[in-house]
Image (cartoon, rainbow, N blue to C red; front, top):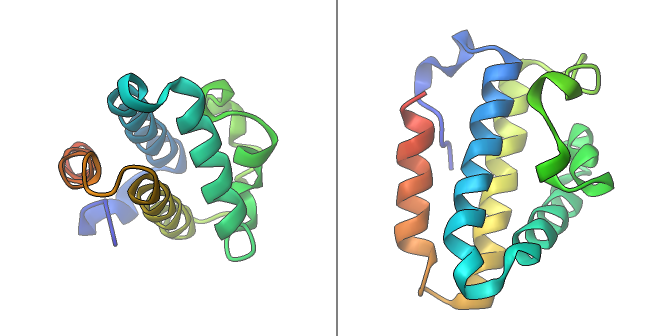
Length: 124
């Protein structure tokens, strides 16, 4: 699923990264009361592992928690990645995160949270 609007090609890698990190933070904020803060970090790391073969640049999310990543600090790691590749990789990452959440909670959290994250990213 694509979370960014069609005009996302005019957005910089840093803006894309920041938007997706905010989306993951929103997931963390909503999931924390039910599953704990560490769950989201593990969820993101597991999702990154599952999509890393297709998107090697997401390896940075396996090495350290997403909470330790600042968009401007990872630009070197993303230097060869086009904005389109970045959007595709981060879309796949979010899809995997939601799949993991669905395994943990069924449809208790995912439908509403998915809509909220999608709306947040489309405002970019």
